[in-house]
Length: 209
Length: 209
Image 1 (cartoon, rainbow over the protein chains, first blue to last red):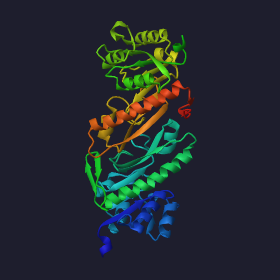
Image 2 (image 1 turned 45 degrees about the vertical axis):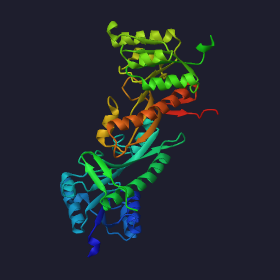
Image 3 (image 1 turned 30 degrees about the vertical axis):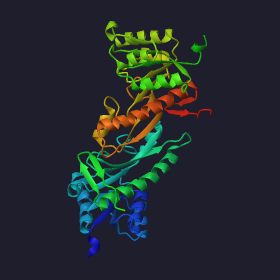
């Protein structure tokens, strides 16, 4: 079963899943040499599930209420991922905090995208936070996930200028374009095993052309 | 006395004064249409004082020990600035926190340059903090000074990439080039009265060509 070799991705999403869709498209086109085995969501109504199914990807709702604790829920997630051979997990608008139960079996293999230049503006509504602060340079960050929210080592960042006529919405849209770009690039680097982690510093080799 | 019209700048510096020198040069060349009336330092040995004198600018050491309190010291600073007609104050590596006594008479007219993309990495050794965090995008910020350190409204920011072979020192040098550039641009905008402040958002009109 050759398709079980190489990089097998699982995506966790709670919302409409635009970053998920960017990853699915890049895997489908071959831009990322990996296969997305499953999209998991804690929300039955997440647009991400519908989009994934439409793109021919297994999409599963796991209901947190059917699990007694965050840890129990995370064990169920891990079971779903493991039975499909997932070896790289991408959070894409996943709104639950993950626990040690989740991170231990996937140490160093869980990525997230956040719509700010971390460590500025962690948490919810990062773009609105940046807009309200009045920064002139906003951006986004792909990082490894650790137990503390939005604090893991930085894999990739992109700067995005704030314009005088921006609203939080227009700024968010400009950041989102860069999110799609760097998340695809970062996942590609993991799929091609071009990533070296040294403490909090992460080095990515250029791809072979 | 025509030179007392327009923008009259006072600079506060505690160190070698490389940002001070960039401002002095830009004023001397006419790039910034303003006159630097005085450089003040809390440290007698500050290289900034010597550089300012060499460039023909009045440079004064005010000894904090000769003033009973931070407030008393700041009143002495304000007296020095006022007697020279200063209407815009630029902090350039000034290591003391300013008090209400200083800010009240110069409300909205005190600028600082900080070597990070605030609100990331406030305080000392911002470049080292950024390097240790492992960010991929560093930078610098010109901001209005408020009582809380490194928290005033952002006037201008520049992003600076972090390279794989950077040290904290090489990163600092790359950031410093951008500090000089945006501090001159920002002070020029104030001197030409192209700045509009709306709460925490600051808008700068393009210069007339």
